[in-house]
Amino acid sequence: MIPPDARTVLDAACGPGWLANRLARDRRVVGLDTDFDALHGLMCATVRGTLARLPFPDRTFDAAICCEALEHLDDALLAPALRELARVAKHYIVLTVPNNEDRTFSRYRCRRCGVHFHSHGHVRSFTADALRDLFQAASAGRVVCRGVKEIVPVAVFRQSRRLYRLRPEPMGFWIAGKGVRCPHCGFAGYGRRWTPLFRAWSLAMKLANGLLHPVPRRRNCWLLGIYELI
Image 1 (cartoon, rainbow, N blue to C red):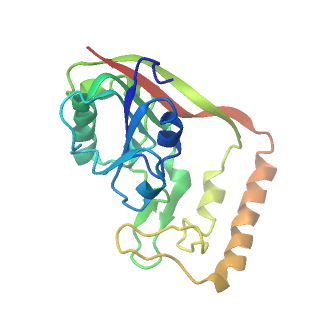
Image 2 (cartoon, rainbow, N blue to C red):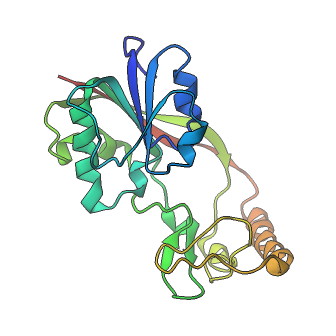
Image 3 (cartoon, rainbow, N blue to C red):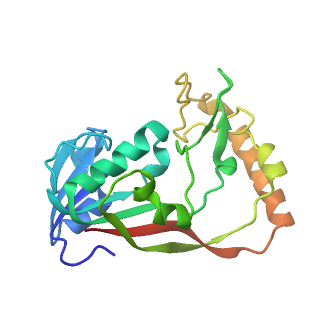
């Protein structure tokens, strides 16, 4: 979906770099992330930095892409990040985010401090309409939306809210090995000796939900927005 005339690309918040490495086969790519360790796997130029303060001059790249990152930004960071993407991009911006995510179904409770949080750190949801108006809402002037598409069709089962609340994770019992950490106090769950119990508990709730809702439906789980700078 990245326009073919975009020969220089910034992959902002690139993570371990699977997309940056693929694009680097035939484009000049720079991967940026806050996680220094993640950048070690990239086969292109790398820079450590944040979305809210990109360390590049204006209009450095033909295209700036930002995949699976905006949903992690709170109100104080989202608008600055969008303005920075618009500043360093010369022609295009490409974004992907979860499609109208109901964050209730990934909500955990910390057993130690009681704080509720999203298991993947998501703090906001996006609809297609919100993505179309994203840069205007952030006062990033010269950005025009050229299209928003639903992508990645997946077979999903309807989830009972009541059964989800009875799973161990929302009640404060995390399955060891998930890599979940409380963003408030840093608590990382229980020891592995509890893992079989919690897995059985979680599986039982999933099976019960499957009996209630046995037929999956196809759903596009992500949104992709393409923008042009004028």
